[in-house]
Length: 199
Image (cartoon, rainbow, N blue to C red):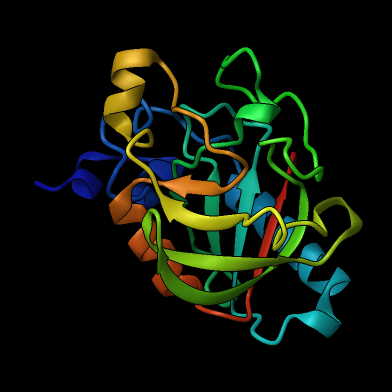
C-alpha cells in the first residue's frame, strides 16, 4: 500500500507522496476544496491578462502551519485538489515556529513573498530540477532578483515533521520534498498561476 492509499478523507486523499504520518492525519476543513476553487478563480480573474493557461492553479495558503499540506494544485475543470507540504522563508518565521509570521519582498529578507506569480522555465540549479517564477504584483516584484523559485529541499517531508514537529525553512523559495517538486513542476509547467497568501 502506497502513501496515497494510506490516507483517507478530506484533502488527505489527494496529498502528495511525501506526506504519510502526522501531516496525513490532518482532517481538512469542510468544503475546503470549494473554498480553494473560489480563491483560485478570483486570482485568475485578477491576473487574466498575464496568465495564458488557466486549467490549473497553484495556491500556497500560508495561513496553515508548515506541518500541514498547504500548497494546493486546483484543477479548474474538475475541481479536484492535490495538496503538498511546502516550506516558507526563514525571514518570514525568525523564531522557527512553523508558522509564517510576515511576508516580505525585500532583497536579502529571506522571506516568503505573497501575491500572484507566473510559472516560468524549468532549469537545473543548486537544488536540482527547479522552476523559475515571475512576480506579477508589487508585493513580489523582486522574485527574479531574489531568485525565488520552486525547488526540492531535504528539510521538507513527513520525516521532518515526525522529528521536529515542523518543516525547515527556505530563503523565500517554495521548497518541496523531491517527489512532490517533480509532480508540482510537471503539472504546473510554464505560463500558469501560482498564488501565495493567507486565505
